[in-house]
Image (cartoon, rainbow, N blue to C red):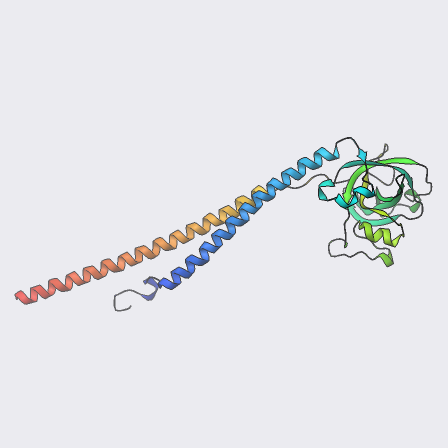
Length: 270
């Protein structure tokens, strides 16, 4: 007990401690609110992405961009439904490790010589790990038209795995690196996921491009906003507790002073 009759734990905290707590709490509220707003902005972006991909992927195929259009190609061109005429370049296929709804295996990436005078990589589809090479290797090169979805290059490799061109180990569809390893010459900066064939059992299996994009940003935003409200509630609770404690101390001091004065007055009259 101290001189005022209060235990150390029942005494209010110093003003500088309350100020520091308030500053930290306010910073936390601003940070959590900012994260919530950021998730709402991400949700708007994701909804736009989903709508754009659905529109482009299911639109009639248009000509694949040629060299004159390559400088302007960006992420907004991803998943455009395109077509290109020409022929495959035999003997230069590349297997890229993949895990799909069909299990573990590889994408078969084959160079395609377009009639426009450039090469574009075609992701002909998926083959399981136990597939025989004869089932996917390009052995004939007749002229044909390939349709599919335009995809942007995937540089540097996969998660925790890096492409090793010298060893022939590929974990991402890195257009520039594959073109260099296969000495393909002028190659488009994108690749094309080939549409599914008439027979879904034929290898490679095309048409496996994932067009589903998870959109949980509203849940994340509500979580951040809820945490911000909880922090505000904690700050209000501490503030109310400290205010009541100070009011109690002032009341006790006032009562003690009044009692001392009354005792003094009684002593004087006696």
